[in-house]
Each structure stands twice: as structure tokens, then as C-alpha cells.
Image (cartoon, rainbow over all chains, first blue to last red; front, side):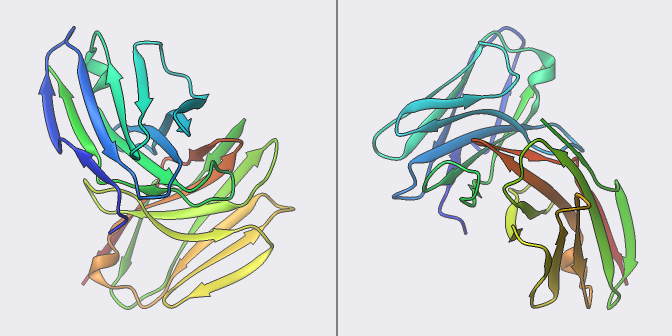
Length: 114
Length: 108
């Protein structure tokens, strides 16, 4: 148990729809990172929030957006869903931003886009 | 940026030893992480190496050579529950860059 939770566990959407995924970090963890993991691949970094501000972004289009709240919860929003967005979405929290702080992952949300 | 390579698959017998190699190229080095990920589950932290050498944690050990851009994860006395994907990851600035993962299958 890492103390990081995500909801929902599974989600099915159709192309063009919008989705919001939620994450609850460990108490005291000021940093949350979101990753996308396609089947058979390693997680790919989407973006990171530190103390409610975006702290870095990977190579994902603007239709991927996020928010972090003062109560250690955060959201990943994806607009105009595409078939290739089907993946496991992971959030990871740490007390402070990497590089040296270990990130602890939640169980993930499996998103299927039809 | 980083380029991280690890083998795709490995198979071993229960009770045996398996070594999973990871090579990396990075513009700055701040250590290397190993994570274990069972199918459909979240990655769980195994080890973090920042200095050269071998670090042992029970049945699992991790080795790092910074000059060679090389690490390995050693799994000893393999158990069926060790069947999983093993990911090496290198932090750069604010993010972790992961390899594609090595799927280890343990057979009876």
C-alpha cells in the first residue's frame, strides 16, 4: 500500500468525449505526477504539479490538462478523446519534486476509448 | 534526454537467479530506480542507486556503474510471485523516464 488512491478503476468512453481522472496523494506529498502507460510499454510522463502549480510537462498535447488541490488531491482531464488515449493512467506522489525523491504510484485508472 | 534499454522478456525457473540489465544514456545523472509492476497494477518501488556498487535488499539486489551507464537488478531464489514486469527509470529534472520494462516469467 502506497497511500495513493485513484478513481475510477476502469472507464470506457467514446471518441470525442471528455474524461476526468482523480488521484489522492499521500498526506504531506506536495508533488503529483501523471503518467500514461500503453500496453507493453513503460509509463510516459504527462505532467507534474508541485504546490498546485504545473512544474513540468511531457510531450502531450494541450487537450491533456490537470489540476492539483490543497487537500493533496489532483485531476487529469483529457478532452476530445482519441482511440490512442486508451491506456493505464497512473499518478505518483512524492514529498518534493524528483530527481531524488522516490515517487509512489497509485493503482491506476484503465481508460478504454471506443 | 534519456535513452533507456532493457530486455523485453526473460524466463527462469523457480528457485533460480535472474539478472535484468538496464543501460541508459542521460544528459545528467541523479540516480536510477527499479520498480516492479504486476500485470494491471501500479509500479512499486524496489530500489534506488545513486552511487556505484551493489545494494542488497533481501532476495533483490541492484547494481550501478555510472561510468558505463549500466545497472542490473538481481533476483535470487525466484518465487512464482516474482513473475512481473521490472522497470528501470532515470530521473531528470522533474520527471522519471522509464524503460519499456522487462517481463519476467517464473516457471515451476
